[in-house]
View 1 (cartoon, rainbow, N blue to C red):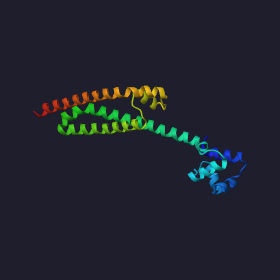
View 2 (view 1 turned 60 degrees about the vertical axis):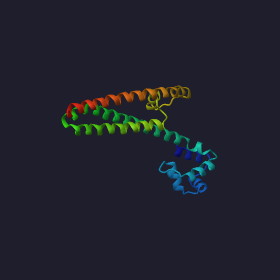
View 3 (view 1 turned 45 degrees about the vertical axis):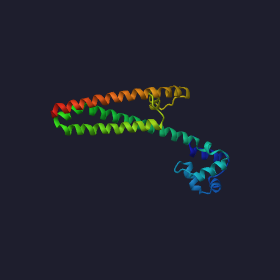
View 4 (view 1 turned 120 degrees about the vertical axis):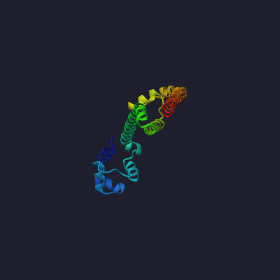
Length: 195
């Protein structure tokens, strides 16, 4: 239940008018009306007075809004992860597809342009990693669950956490191999066009 509904419900349950409630929480009747019509939101001091007046905990008073805010934050983070993932993929594909034509037609300047494209893709990769760290998601199953707006239960989370050290080791090997291939490719390009 949303806060404005909670305020109105609790006020009517106590048979208080808006003016009577306003006197108890030291605001105007218009302020109570604005809260109940979802035109404004009470400050923390008013929330404490409302929970005391209604004889309910602050958590009970705002619980619905907290859940809604948490869902909104999760949606934003999921959308951010998906957007950054799409941008990372796009720039990485652009790099792979354009590095040879750029280096052939523009020489060293083409390699610089390709390097900038690669750098931009790495910026998005770091944003993705930051989001993953904030939300404590590392394995494929955790990421997939997160993008669907779900969380793993404690047992599944423990199983996935056990996989992380092996995945990091394999990731280091994969990144090292890819870096080696890319370096060898650039060496071949430089030897082919400079010498």
